[in-house]
Image 1 (cartoon, one colour):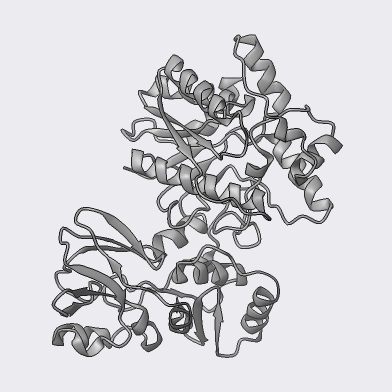
Image 2 (cartoon, one colour):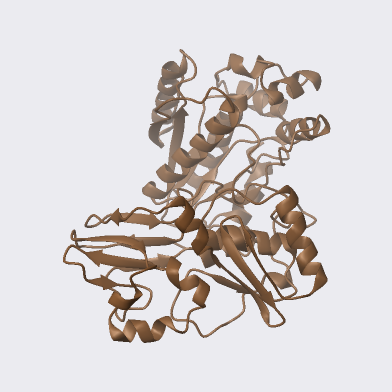
Length: 431
């Protein structure tokens, strides 16, 4: 069985990379089989592995499951980290909340470990169950072999790899039995309160599968929604010609995106998500309205998913909507020396100083140095109030996007996020 998965790992991963590979391990049969297969591939190429286990605090046996995972990782001589979803749990929407928490915890831990790829144990049965759920009215999308992490901003620079999507759950358990491995059976997989458990029962698949049904299937977040991403015949996301970013004479990375006028509605919607730094894709009427405006071919200005979209004959400019910042409020974010923070979902900022905070530029443009005020004119007017500005304790202000050299290390995330979401990155990035 491992040999049937190795070609996928060969295609998606860098054999000589010094970065570790992160593997989600629940202790169930699917994730245990994935860990064993990944370990065999990694040993052949000298790669390191870290197993990540999430305790959602939803089952009295979960601490024991975490111990099982820790002992398994130790026995297999791979790294291990236990993660826990803390805080109050919602009374409604628990499966979606648990899924979002799991993705965020795993992505954070993978990135902190230096891993760019997080492997997950979804199987062919998960795809079949998702189809059954959609037939009953659910909007759950199919898990994809390769995709960016749906958690934002925790999942920045982290990609998900699901190499077992062509393998059935029963085959994985046969493999584990053959090599003498045991796994955890989670009774929540039989709880018909959850849509996936009902689908699993209706399809007469093995009664007990992987992990918590609350964790299965993705959906609802950036890069995890098939209605936004384009997919090629193989099921892998791809970048259509219309996703090419236009080259415009803007100072460094200003946080927005400029697309060709021929961009598809799904491409523009994803650009809106990335430029706004938000995590919930537009759906329904909003997406239909965007499609109509693009089809009409006339100039227009609309807001979508926290972004402002300006379209004319020359192209489509997508930027953070200043009105959204004013309505929602964006409190000053203090910066701590040596720590990287993501501000407004759009800019990663790192500083060695402790006497400054970041906030929107709106209302502070006149406090910028003269050279920065000059450079500001090159940025679309509607985008200017949403730029980050650093304010020192003495009141001095500086925009790191406009400063030469910038007073902090700053990285605009919109372009790399957009490229990842539209399939421009289809294998493990270089370290």
